[in-house]
Image (cartoon, rainbow, N blue to C red; front, side, top):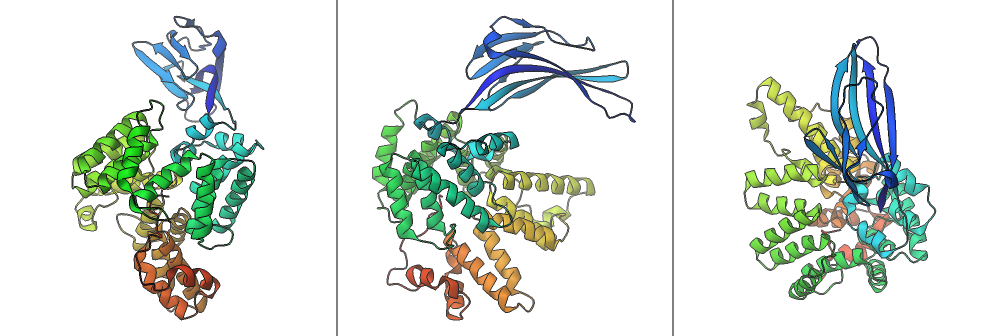
Length: 474
């Protein structure tokens, strides 16, 4: 969890001469203990241009300031505001306030409860991740492992997955229940140093996490039980009753409203599902923006979907940065040149932001647009490879599939065919059932010899093909 320790008031200024780019800052700092409601804050103002700042409210979670007729709320997670700007004597002045804060890293239920949403980790700044990397505590190792695995795998994803696995193993050995759950996810998707899907080991690790009280494991297991996947019984009605009981607790994690909406959808009650997603959003669940936008999209409620995705972008939902991705090429060509430029620039910025937040689909559409040279994106194999590799590292099956298609085109070498086959296997692990026959054919042709054990155990024909091996909710 993050706490704030000090309020800083900065007056930044720079000469307006275009030939000079020097910046200067006068800072006035106030420790939290010195701030009181009703206090007028006096600060260094070299231009003498700005008004008084008033303290309206002070608490461990926030400080509320008054400036002019407006109020500004700062929190440890929303730390800065620009209050005013003006100029004098060929100099531009800017009045900014920001909170100095620090992470409290501790092995406590409250700490792991706080980090249930992936979005809390996806929004880390460089300073945030440095603070966790500097700590040797098991809790910090777990958070760094989750950041590497879920948000920032690089070009060599296998190496990064191995680093994350080691950190999870060290945290688990020290008793971090959620680390067992993350290891379970890695084994269910073949994202481990062995590069093998192992559902038995995944189940064992999940059960260990559950026995140790991991709420992260409880959330995923509830989803698995709704659909009866990954060695979980199919019992949506029972899950519904359990979550309804949970949500009677005023301190329940908002993440449960995402699961509650999903179970209502599964049971055929879309209206109640939608209501749950909206309640989850109101309570702070960022994932519910994805859930609600997806539901509205399927129902053809485009205007409502657009509004929710716009709100979701403000809440830093990676999925919501897809807004506008599906413009048809014919529609794009009907735009004037200025509109074309704005659309392409906006989509490029959005999709890159979504990919940085760990949304693989955003990386896929970047790679696809660069590959096809559509919607104003220049054709570039270098950019295509960069973003499809990123999408695959983030667990996006579409990225794996397109990379495989590219490798198999234009007189492929034996190495190209083997790489394409392994990418199709990866897409299959991620839930693209259409890759099953291609994987079986590649296996028969000797292109997946390194994965014979996995394929023979999980992917060859069985009497019951619908064995519930896929989990779309990791």
